[in-house]
Image 1 (tube, rainbow, N blue to C red):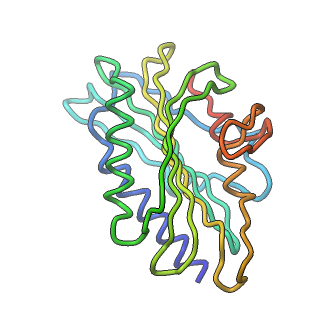
Image 2: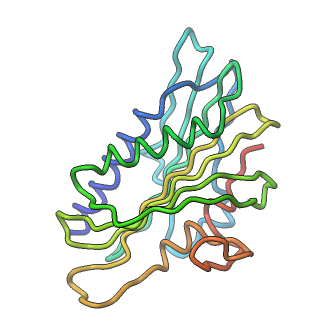
Length: 208
């Protein structure tokens, strides 16, 4: 059961990355990553899922890193860095991220609602995020998803973070566990779902 969930998350993230290769970067590209000090509480980087790509004779590039946690409430966060000759428009990236999430999970997750907002991360970048809540219709379990984007002017890159977390397990009825979800989204202000903390994965992304 857990292996099937991890496979589902992994395949979904790969599909998301493929759909997000709209444009990616100039000659040199440094991948954004979650600082090691925040990759705690059972989380780890799955180095086998590190990915890079380029197009247009190497003038556009992208790379990604994926962080996971196992258990009865598996979760995953993929951080993708895009670099283009001209820095991409944040709202266009957000739109593409929204479309890709919805298309990727169309046949597996029934979305109940989504909300959007903005926040400022520890790296001082102002981000745009969208949150989804839904039910994995194959597993009959609740899932939370975040898509968060921003531009880093210092590195000349666009950053896309997509997090997926199971918050229920049908083997444990009537119990919701949001620990892994909170680990993905938490910040010192508790901006998202009141998740307070300084060790949030997205909040600790290093991009410059």
